[in-house]
Length: 288
Image (cartoon, rainbow, N blue to C red; front, side, top):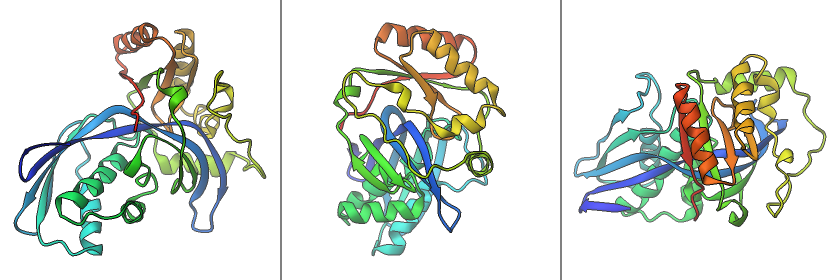
């Protein structure tokens, strides 16, 4: 975290990808339970916080456009803190958006989690970790992950998190490729409900030890989404042809990522997809 003077703080809010995603059940409230490895990567939005003397919360944005009618999760997170804790000052948050929206990369959730962590300190609340996680879960299902980030096994609705050693992943390179469409998360879960037979038991992911058996890290969403969006399967196939050791959909998409054990091959693949007018990024894991 860097500070330009006493009341202005700038910090990065990192994206995530899903290493495998299995849908394990459906709750009475309609939410699905899942089993997934969340990995924080160094693609990031930039958040600027300016503490205000009056108790106002304002948000401005630049970079990738955000729909005018969309709920800004930074503002939602700040207001949830105020509803649960005594706060006498306000904040202006400026979001410089780099993580694509509707891409399965958790950008909005990361912005919200980062807001909770930063305002806990800047507002002098110094909230304990479990309270930050509780507030994060009130904002959205993926937000608690971003309180600690790194590599975590996510279970239940994504709110039951267990830290995992990321040592086997630190040397890898991740190429992200997003077509020019978004996949609606509610629609994707509707496809799961309609077309995917939920398991009575699930195969746990392979342990993260060498050699990694990537074939076990499948994403259930791929099985029900690619018939509607065949371009996602084509991107995955092209990544594998370009020497990715594994490729998969992140979350419910629409980003497909390829994992490379060689930096040069990753850069070549990224350059190829950029030349085809795809949004693309070459990233690394964030080590906590």
